[in-house]
Image 1 (cartoon, rainbow, N blue to C red):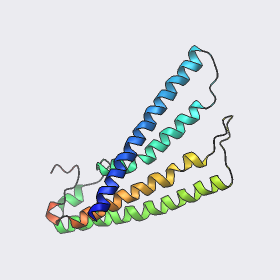
Image 2 (cartoon, rainbow, N blue to C red):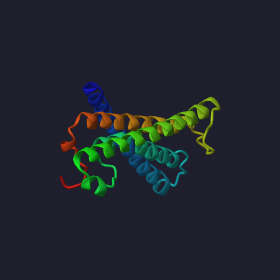
Image 3 (cartoon, rainbow, N blue to C red):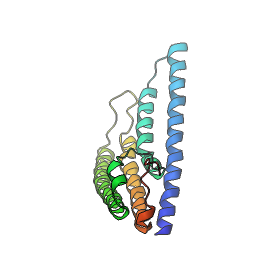
Image 4 (cartoon, rainbow, N blue to C red):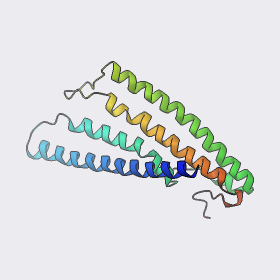
Length: 171
């Protein structure tokens, strides 16, 4: 279990770096688009679409990294008031439910990506970008998020109830 937790945390870290690089690339493309369009008076063909795909993909792929840092919004009033064992059960239940929901979403994201790939869907722009490529970030991001939640679940299982800290609770 320790190996799985460490492996998923490293993977989430690497994917977080990739996500940050996608954001940087989107900013660079936006700057290039501004120069080409407004200073050189040349039309842009692919830039806007590329920036949209990069930002959406960066958001989806960055989910496991944000979870690793415990950066997602949570409601902690009720768990803070509970005794340690009940608090641990609430955390485990919420992680279990989140894994279930995300697994379903990742499956349907895979299905969408597979359909886009097999039917050769392309964007309805001049660029005609293959849609399976940006769609791939849906099952990958949600699947990796699911893995990070599983790692958090296993980490919570091995943690003593008294040592469970609700992030943002001021402990």
